[in-house]
Each structure stands twice: as C-alpha cells, then as structure tokens.
Amino acid sequence: MLGKIGFVMGVTVLAMFMMGRVESLAAHRGFGGSTAWAQQGDDPAGDASPQDAFVAQPDAVPDVSGTWSGALEDHRFGHGDVFVEISQNGSKLSGSWDSNLDNGVGGGLKGKVRPNNKVHLRLKIKGNCGLNAQGTFQNGDEIAGNYQANGCSKSDHGSFDIFR
Image (cartoon, rainbow, N blue to C red):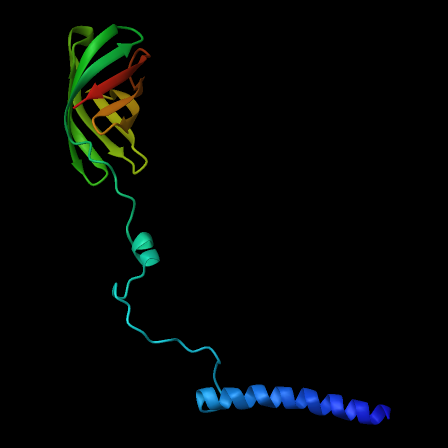
C-alpha cells in the first residue's frame, strides 16, 4: 500500500512538472528560453515614460540674472547700500558690484546658483581680497544671506538683502 501511495505522488509531481513545460512549449513554440515576454503596445506618449523624463532632466537652476540693489549690514562699517549686476550662464554667475561702504568699495564677481536656490558669490575687492557671500534666492526677486572677508588684511563679515 505504501508503494502505491508513493507511486501516485510521484506521478502527480511529474505530471505537474510536465504540464508547466507543455504550457511553456505552447506559449513560446519551444522548450528553450524565458517564460517572460515583453508585451507590445502603443504608448500614446511616445517611447519615453514619465520616469524617464524625470530622470533625464536635471534640476533647473533659478534665473538670478539682472540688476540688484539693497542693504548691507557690515561688522566694521555699519549700514550701507549695495548694487549688483549679475549675468548668468546655466549655473555660473559673473558680473560686478559696488557699495557705498568705506568710501565706495566694489569690483567684479563670480559665483554659482544651485537648483535648491542657494547662491554662492565671490565679490572681488583688490588683489586677493574679496568677500565670500552665501545667500538664498527667494520670492522670485530677493537674495538674502551673509558674507565674510577672505584674503584681506582685516577680517570682516556682514549680511545683505538685495532685490531686483
């Protein structure tokens, strides 16, 4: 009796295995190959999926180009005004700046703007002396942040808030 039960179970397992293989043979016209086949269909949006579009496009940097003016609060020289002209090429910034602090200080500028609205500027004064400024572009027309002197004979720092 035990032999008959074993035989029936063996035949059942073998039959289940063979049914899967026969089903694969019918679906794919042969025993070889994978059972997963790609489906063909019309994609109304073209070949790119929404995920591809999201991955393919880098985060856009904000447009901060233009003429800016606003206030400075300097550690050494007190309150003053600043005027900035920014040109933008992608994320790279260049331009010039002037202020009425310390009998008028200004020069060229270089920097970057990031997709997260962070603006980093190097405001050249004279020689190796300049200001490193870090700000945030906000409300579509304002950059506010802090700066510190770098490479100058005296240390200095302050804050700024400019508008276009």
